[in-house]
Image 1 (tube, rainbow, N blue to C red):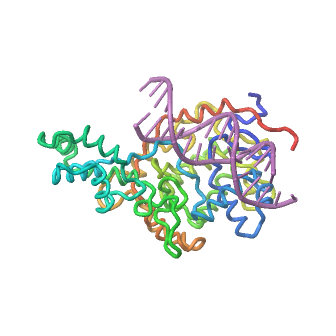
Image 2 (image 1 turned 180 degrees about the horizontal axis):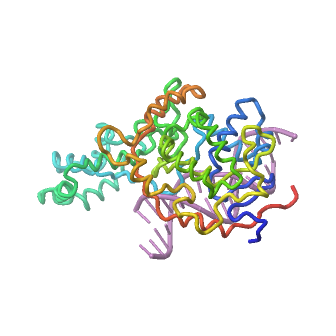
Image 3 (image 1 turned 30 degrees about the vertical axis):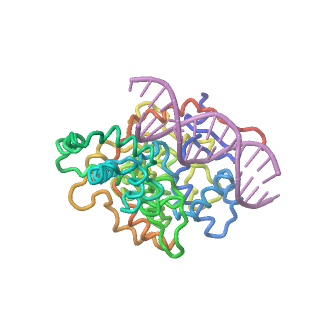
Length: 367
DNA sequence: TTCGTTACGGTTGAT
DNA sequence: TTATCAACCGTAACG
């Protein structure tokens, strides 16, 4: 790459910087929604923020559907349906009625509310469970004893389900129409997995001045100001933690590394032009933990109450929820539900280094 | 001109 | 540790 090219990311036809495969920064997503609510047409938003109109359309459509500006949870595998809870119930059913059929077990799982129609195991899965995990019931419960030995206090099944709150009207919402007037649960409506908490526009609007102030640094990637912002986001905005399995890491972290060009937008005037910035850190000395969306180790230790200690440390920000109600009336219940537990298991920060492969200015063909 | 849709190349995280 | 898979992303192009 040459010096004139962004070290990371690409430039779209409108001159905006983007990183292929990665979501736009929340500041821009937020701005898109804000401008739309001011009555600005999507095509104008697209031009002003230098984001493709398809993207604008998608973000606005999602916002209208879900009330969230945030991207979906990226990566991961589909949650298993044969959770420990389900296995436990299947075992119970089998113990009570050794002659029970798999389809009967399936019906009972539904009837008892252990599963819903979206996550109930198939008959074949139940058969497999019976065969592999339960087997001869007379050989009592190796699974249970094992589990209890290793997790004397942990309600592992509960935690599992907690993390893998599978989309369903019962559990965590999902791509299921919500009853009119009924707040979508967990902010997952339209989202394949649970959504982070406090994702309403106003929640983020509440910190927008900080975003714009901080993001505006022309050298946002490794400056005292950025460090301050990074620290700030981690300490103050855990509420927006975007955790794994639908509750990903902090999406606001993105802003630290990824400013977007935006001309003519007063409130985002601090964005720098695409040609004059790099969306990601370019210099090697930057801490790997400073890279995209990666919390600092300190963040794990002191910033987050990921561990289930007393109360609900995994939703440490419910106090902010009320502020989020202004934009979308249905936010409340959703977000209250949304501050679910999650685990923060950020892997190596190498991922964004791969972006350097795409450090060329792309798609600069004449429009 | 505007906007919804979709193919595409990409990233991510669980398995 | 690596590969695979299926989710997601934004862009560009089409209609």
